[in-house]
Length: 165
Image 1 (tube, helix red, strand yellow):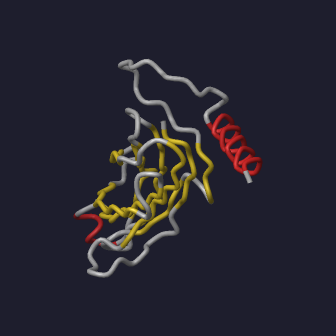
Image 2 (cartoon, helix red, strand yellow; image 1 turned 60 degrees about the horizontal axis):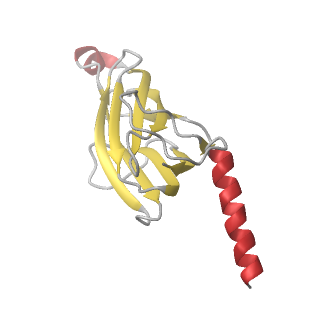
């Protein structure tokens, strides 16, 4: 039994070393911007979605970084949204409700929802920090209906596995 447990620990250590680039060490604090977290992505880092009015639709990229130990920063960067009709011409902003779910040593299936508004210009960013704790984390990001009392998916979403510093 102890041999199996030791081999499991060794496998986890090898996986952690592989995902973090082979370096498991303390990193000194600096004023440099947070670096991207190496991750295994299911499907893609890009999510297509549609929003709240006049057939607005577009896509955004999901980037994961860590500003400090035990915190995962999720940054959504728009590729630009578009829409149809007079309503879109008056108000070219697409409102989405983004849902995140993470499982880690700190929480099981913790959900968080926040509104985002993207316009026609590519490069617009929205950033949120989540206290995921350090270690292995599974995080999902998906767009939901903004103006609905029921959580209805409005895109496929993405899922990531990573080791949070």
